[in-house]
Image (cartoon, rainbow, N blue to C red; front, side, top):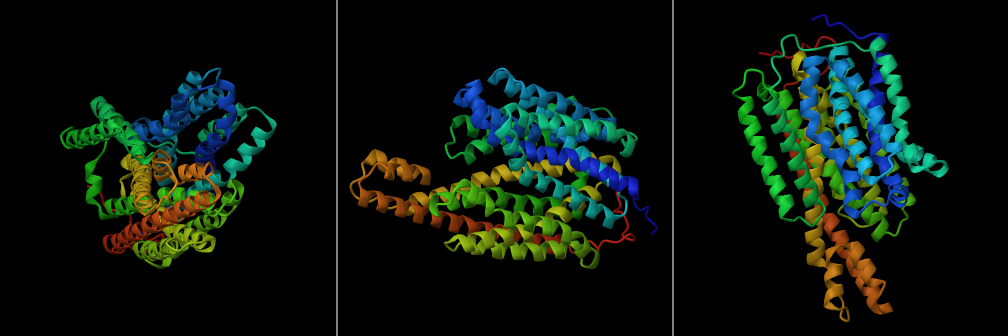
Length: 506
């Protein structure tokens, strides 16, 4: 089968598509650095500071499916450029926000605009690269851009905050989006579904509210102090998701085409991706705490020790496409995940060397699935549905990350509480505080007499290490399950080449 191969224009266009992806990942890390300075300037309340941090991610997750489907209807390039313009305006508004309320509104607009960017870039890659092997390579570069933003975000943000005011960190979005607005019409093709049907506004409301409520509930559970509102929000989100799915089966132009799930490449890749995404963020957070609070590393030292795993991710992204040209993608992904599970088992051992080595092996092993799985999710959908397929992939990963934080954080917390032995001489109130978190135990220990302080701190660090070990062991089981799924469900997907036929669609 003769498939049209991408040329120079498409590869240059890919560089343009990587720009918003790079910016979105930078924007996440920059806010963490800017938070102390903006808190001093704007004086937000504790609740306002939480909303400044969280509303961006909430609205991205809530609007992904809607924006992916709108892109299929009005044109992916058009939606991308509209989102880029809105992102630039919101970035400037955030940079010069005179109050916490205005900054929250700007962050909300950034979230809605950000939801237009991710599915639009991924679905445009689907339309620009028809050769499956080239498309997989393009997606690997796209994902390297996202990872690169996570790495350079703290460096660029730190340099700006060192020399300018906190708002300068948000202004990064303006020149990047200006480049996209100029180069996009010249280099990116337009594509829209030929007969998309009428947009069902009821489905739009159901999908947005369900995603927002479920994500809020899961994030509150991950914070460790779930109240009735969090549980109610999660239950309401899941109930609305069921109503949404039932509605998609009955309307003529569904917001989400459930027929996509009948394709094993789509459903198997999506399920495998979500399983692996469950593990990464939660164990990453625990590992960061372990390095600082147990091993006593400074934040800078802990950050430097994450560089090997970052480099491993990039190496895995680069290696995945050529491997998938020789070996079936399902087997490549499964072999990588077995390696990743072995890395997680290393995290059950105490010390810095097992921790860094284990994290590096996990990210190296998981990265081929991230590339190949994303490629199969987008590539298995018909061209007119690739926007909604890309949005569903991003939504599953956003929700999976939040759910993983809740699950593995809860596992580690339960083991920590069960294993912590508070020495005699500590008051019941102080013992209760020490039993909540490792940070709380260290704070309590600092106010105790010398021998008691040392005993409590050592016991807390040992208990936290046990919690990390149990959570890592559970993570290894989940990753092995994903490996088995990839090897079995995706075993019929052939190795990639220009002669690989496109999937058949109804």
